[in-house]
Length: 149
Picture (cartoon, rainbow, N blue to C red):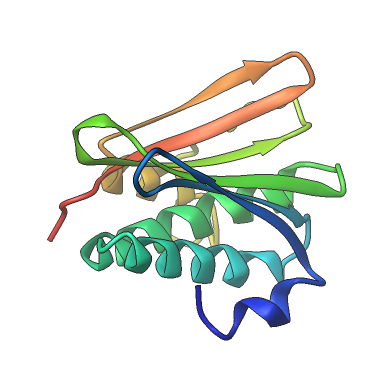
């Protein structure tokens, strides 16, 4: 990726998964702390740039920031996993996996509320999103158009 990543080595554990001809996914385990949100944003932007999909980066950064913030705020395990994957049909899937079994719940935020709009934003920006229950936690995902302007 770029020169920023060596600085991150003490903060994250990552692995790039590759397909036959090109990288097809990035998976990263991060600490459950606020400092991980900009790291998620950076890794998503850099990976999409490396995949020649910079036009998707702004949307993907917003989505990953909302999902990571929710994960940090509402779970209690020390780490979570971010995965960015190229899917068939040009779709980019952003996934966050954690050890909490509590499912995300969209809220109707009032005009004076400071929070509660994150999942509504994800719903608008993503082609689809959802949550998969796991035996030991959950996986929340959002599918983005890889060719979005």
